[in-house]
Image 1 (cartoon, rainbow, N blue to C red):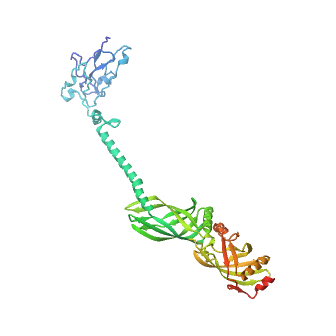
Image 2 (tube, one colour; image 1 turned 180 degrees about the horizontal axis):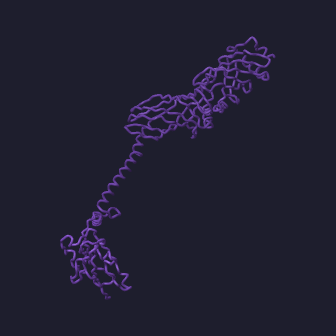
Amino acid sequence: MDFNVAHPSGCHRVDGKGAPYSPRVKLGGKPAVRKKRTCISGTIRLGFPQRLWLPTKSVARFTHSPTCRLGLKCFPALQLSNSMATYQREVKTPVVDTLQSPAHNNVVDYDHYQYQQPDSTFKVDVAANSQDVLKEENEKGKPLKKFLWWRITKKQRIFAIVGIVLVLLVVLILIAWFVIVKAVFQHNVNKIKMTVNYLDINQITDQTTLSSELSLHLTHDLSMNARSDETTAKLLYDGSEFATFEFPALTIDKGEQSYDLNITSDLVVTDADVFSSMSTAVMDDVSVVFDTTAKVKAHALGFSYGGLDFKRELTIEGLNNFRDPLTVIDHIDFWGCTDEGWVMDIDVNVTNVSQMGLNGIGYLNLTLYVDQDYLGYLSGMTPEVGVPRGMSQQTFRLFVEMTNRANMVKMVTALIDSYVQYFITGESSYATNHTLFKDALAVMNMSIIYTDSLERIDLNTSCNLATILTT
């Protein structure tokens, strides 16, 4: 296709002719100054094989050029056909604000007006003084290198490597802290062996708080000196929590150690039903197994680590319902015989073989049977003693109503024959004021065999065995 490009007047043409300076223009009463023009030449590649060379009009600084101020176009408009318009490409050239004319600088520089071959690449020769532009050009000129799945510069690659190293270090530290350090601490915690010496309930302040003393025997062989913070331990029976207590802070020496730890603390009942089930088992069984769990914070080797699992299975010996040894009657005092009934005090030696002491259980109201026949009720006279571990002497006052005279005669006859089988139970709803132990007392069935005839019996003047038998 053939088309003509009109050379603007005042600029050099292909043949080299033309003025390198703009016409003299006098503005604002100042002397006329000729501005040096910057001529830009280039090639525009079209979609077809022909190449067109387009010289462009010289561009004066926008703020200084009179032609631009007068609203004239600094580039010639190309009149192309509609079919060729799709192949046009816009060429934008930055203009430096500080460009001065040769007349102003008294220097003529014709290097800006080199003839450009049609096949040469587009060139812009502008004396740029913008550091940002230079920096951007330098960055664009840096070669890109492949890094993993991306192509990045050398600086970006350094930052990426440093970031990856930091991330790996953080991951390794976290693994070491949560895996290795925890494993070392947990391993030493697991070395601590624990057994129960006893559990004494000394006072029952309300239905949920029991003042108690727990004695534990600890053995361990640690590889380091350590200490632990105070924590709250839970007691579980049959997998369910029934109480909590405060476990004190400990200082543990390395090497083989064996010692007793006595903990005086309130046993706080968290589930009354589970506690009743546990106490019932202690009353009737030979032994009872329950668990203790706690979260421990340990300190060793300059490190502190919390949330360590401390779980132990503890076995405590039960009362076995006072079956072995049997309770022994030490003395019977017949001191009240009236028309309404009989009153006597009975001293018994009770042996609590369990590892649980009920020192603070208070008053007990029990039921007395002769063989299988109901005789009367027993009221405890030594509430301050309770039922401690080991052997203790308990005093009960027996009340026999006149309506039970037949069973009273049966008991006196057995006493004379030197063999009486007694049974003491806690079946009465008034057995204790503490509801936590009512279920345990309800299963109590204490057997007593008396074979000493009248040797341990005192009779008041108001009481006569013959009268009891004949009345």
